[in-house]
Length: 197
Image 1: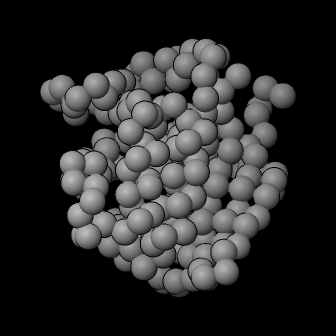
Image 2: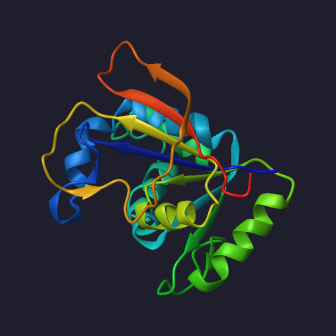
C-alpha cells in the first residue's frame, strides 16, 4: 500500500508560516538542505499532492527552473529538485481552481478522501505533500497521512500560522532524525499511527 508523506519546514517554535501567512519568513530555513531532501523524497514518489495555494506558489517558480535549467539564477539544489519532480504527477485538491494545468489533475474536496483512499490502495510509489498545511491537516484528521517529515529550522518567529490545527491529540512515533554538517536545521521523521490499527 502506498504512503502519503508530508514534508514541511517549520520554525523552532512550531510555525508553518509567519504572521498573516507570510511564507517569505521561512526562506532563510529553506535553502540547499530543504531542496535536496525534497528531491530525495520526490525520487521515491510518483504523485505530488498539493492544495491550491501551494500549487500556485510552485507554479510561479518551478516552471522557470525547468524552462532554463542552465541559468546561473538557480542553485544546484534547485536544478536537482526541478529534475526530480519532472516525472512526478501533480494532483491539486481545490474547489476553486479552474482550467487545464498541463496534466495536473484537480480533485474537488468532497471527492478527495475517497479518491485518495483508492489511490493509496493502487500499486505505485509514495504520494508526497510539500507545504499545503490546510490540506494535510485535513487528511491527517481523516486518517490518510502515513508519515510526517518536519525540517525544524533555527528561527524563532514568535507568531504566525501554527503547523498543526484543530487536531485531536495524537502521539506520533519518531522513526528517524537527521542533521547536516552545514546546516542548523534538523529533520524529524514521524510515523502516524492509524486509528483503524
